[in-house]
Structure formats: C-alpha cells, structure tokens
Image (tube, rainbow over all chains, first blue to last red; front, side, top):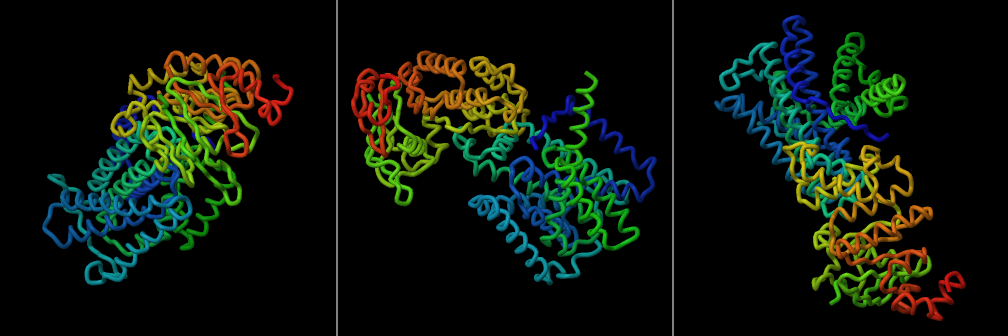
Length: 320
Length: 250
C-alpha cells in the first residue's frame, strides 16, 4: 500500500499544543494513568526510531533491542556504580548506543534483505549473551535492581509526575528531531531507497551510506528510549535484550501503520493499553495480542493510521 | 574527440555470449543510436557502460578515465547517466518527490538532515522547471505508481535529465508509447540535445525515432557490431536490411 503524504500543516503548533495538553495530564489523571502514559511515551519513541528503518528505509532489523537494552544497562550501571550526574550518565549511554549502531551497522550494511535481518538478530543475541553471562557486572539473570531517579541537571525528577514530565520533554524533543529528519532531504532519500534502491544508486547516491545513517539514527534514538526506561522501571533484566523483545517495536509499527510517522505512536498506545487490559484477567496476554495483530494485518494492512487516513480521504471526497 | 570509448568489451552469462569483444567510440555532442533485434546485446551493453554489470574483459573509458569496474553512483558523478527500458522510478513517492531525489543528488543537498526538504527553495524551483519542461507539472502531486504508461516514460527520462549529465544513455525511451507520445518525446529529446549540448547514446526499435534523431547508427547482432555509419548508409546496407529492417523502411 503506498504511503500517503503526511505533512503536518503547522508542526510547531502541533508540537506545543500536544506538549501542553500532555504536560497538564497529571492534573486530572490518577497516578496509574500517568504511569501508563510514561510507558506509552517510551515505547512510542522506541517504535518510531525502529520505524525509521522499517517503514522509511525498508530495512527489517532485529537489532534495535541491542541499542535499547545496552543503553538501559549502561545508564543503570553508571547511575549505581559511579558518582556521575544523571545527565552525564544519560548522554554517555546514548552516545554508546550511537557508536554501537555505527560499528554494527558497518558490518550489517554489507548484506541485504533476509541476510541483513538475520545478521542484526545475531548481533542483538551477542549483546543478550554478554549481559546474561557477565554476572559480576550485570547481575546476570537477576539484572540490576533499585535504579534511582537521580536529579537531571537542576531538576528533581523523582516521583511519578516529575519523571513523567522529564520523559515527556525528552520524548517530544526526540520525536520532533526524528520528524525533522524524515521531512529533510536525507529522509526523502531514505524513502527513495525503500522504494527502489537500485534507481537511487543510478541517481548518484551511495545507498550503503544512507542506510548506515538510518541505522545509526534508529540506534541512537532507541538508546534514548532505553536510557529513559531503566530509571522508570527501576530494574533492568536481560529480557530487555532478548530477541523476542526486538519483535515488539516492529509489531507496534505494523499495528499503527509503518508508512506513517505517527503510526508507531498509535500502535504504542494500543499496545500498552491492551497489555494492561488483558493482563488484568490472564497472564497469556501475548496470545490475545498476537491474535489481534493477525486480524489487524489481515484486514487493515495499512495499520491503524492507514485505515484512518483512508477514511478521512473518503470523507473528504464525499463532501466534495 | 571521443567522449566514450568501449574497448574490446565482452560479457557472457553462462554459455550465452551477450557482448563479444565490442568496440564503440562516441564523440562529444554526437547522437548515436544502437539498433538490433531483441537479444542483440543492446541492454547488456548499456549495463556494462553504466556499471550495472561488470565486463568479463575489456575497458570502458569515459572522458579519458576508465570507468569499468566503478559502481553506478561514481559513474553518475562523472557525468554519465542512464534511463531504463522498463520504467524504474520510486513508485510510492509523488512525481515531484521523484524528480526531487535526482535534483538533491545533483545539487549535493541529499545529506541535509536538519532542514525540511520542502523549504529548500532552489531545489524545489529546479524540480518545478524540469517538470514544466516535461509537461508533468499538473501531475506533480500524483503518486508515481498511478501514472499512465506514457507519463511514466516521461518521468523516467526527466530523472536522468535532472542530473544534468554530460552524456545520456537512453534505453528505448519511447517503448510502449503511442504515436503522439512518441512524437512529443522525440521533440523533447531533440530540444535537450541542442539546448544542453548533450552527447546521447540510445537504443530504439522505432525506426522513425532512430532516423529522426541519430547522427550515426550502430547495428548490433549477436553481441557484436555488424556495421556503423550515418543513417542513410545504414538504411542502404544490405546486411542490415536482411537481418533487421526487412522491407519496412527501405
């Protein structure tokens, strides 16, 4: 299904309007929902960053979990093991994710399609095994527990509302940057590569370099999501790096509509709510979620956003 | 002076010798047409020149520099661009975006990641100019996949022209077009050649196109050059008549 043009008319107004509304949310929502929205925000960023690869560059990568997980571990170790301020730990962790993405990307860019996907899976499993086995540093199977929410620069972010505001700011700024990248010449070239990589080469562009750039962008922002996630949960376990976790942002993108910038955000909202709702009465929530996903992919191949945009368009055509 | 020289280039696929020790020399500013039956090796020759396929042996020299073995993006940067026989574009992007990719590459703006592409004035203006030249401006916002066959061919050629190459390789530019579309495309190509002083190498089956465009014609058969010369000479050549033209134009 071809993606529709999806430019916001006034992105800056949208940015501040949603920031203000979400900022005020704790005033009228119980803490449970504040907690839930925090999770949605982090998952959204993770999924949107993954979708830079999947939906906008046409690369199926299972490696995102390595950057999310290693950043979550790095920030936890730095918070607990050093006296560095949280801001420094945060940026070091994200920087490490970016560097890891660059190095792994250099290897993976040699391959295409299926082989590329498998190689990213292999790399993320290496990360998993290292974290799982290096018990003296990472706590092995037990993970790292009791990660505190230290102040960020001069701001106290301890407590659900304060941490929510911190996550909101970081996620909104990250999403704005990603949106800008997708709307930039680089973003347009990535979409051209997704559509027809050979033709892109015959227009004088080195496809491999652009794919690598996309991989690093996705890894970096995946790292931001990971660094936000660790203090939020207060605990990190090797599960975060397991290959099965790497399917999560991919499924969320499919669910929301991978050809749409905001698709993964819609997917994340549904994903987190369904998870919370179904876990309320059965621990086999993955089964029901899988079933729902199957139905959605069969009947809504463009995802939620695809469905909505199709109907909006139809509505417009009808009113003419 | 010759701009492109193909020296003893061979390429085989398994047991099939697609191009065999082929020599070709094209002068700057020349319009050369390659004719030959299907399977004569015309498209393979294009692939060898443009870097899509590597030759088994021989050399391709462009503007005094050997380009055989280079990757397509490098060859394009040297000023040699090609179009494809089967339209090869970005199906999910709009017509405007398709051409913009080529212009971004040409103007070396494709790496900008901190500024919306819609706000790059000179780039968008150039895209508009190109679309106007090709009568594609009314279709600018249409998703490329929804274009008619003729418009796809026009888009295909506009992508190559947007790169402002020194030399253009057009692989059957009018394939599948109706007679009106063919005529307007010939007109367009003629204009381009005179206006930009392009060197042009094209393959074509439509003899009307061939004889109205070419300065010189090369006739290929089974991967080899049988003869070459000005259109009148080729028209009169007995081999060409027998193998290819039949009674159609002579």
